[in-house]
Length: 136
Image (tube, rainbow, N blue to C red; front, side, top):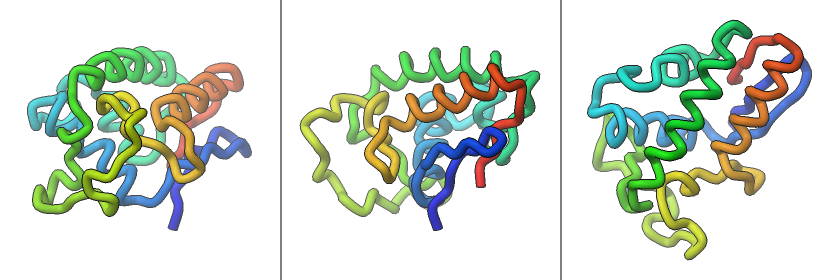
């Protein structure tokens, strides 16, 4: 089942649950030194839990911007598909587009969009409408 980010009635497609878990697993393992929410508490705790309140949207947007910069320092091969089972690998293995140069542009949604851009767009809409961001 595909997950989406919702802001009110506006939907932003993500992909399947394993894909989203891989994103958060990678942040946990490669950026946060395996201390969940240490560097990005709003993204890793609130958003990962499925709901981000309007009051936390500005902080989430700032965290997302910082996270993008930190992900640029990591090669695509640094991806962690599942923090609970480090033997799991992406279904496509190492067969990725040559356009993917770092973990900052590794995660592409099921409809072909950059995940970080999709999240940023959802946060922008949530800030404008002062609404929750919900993953479902």
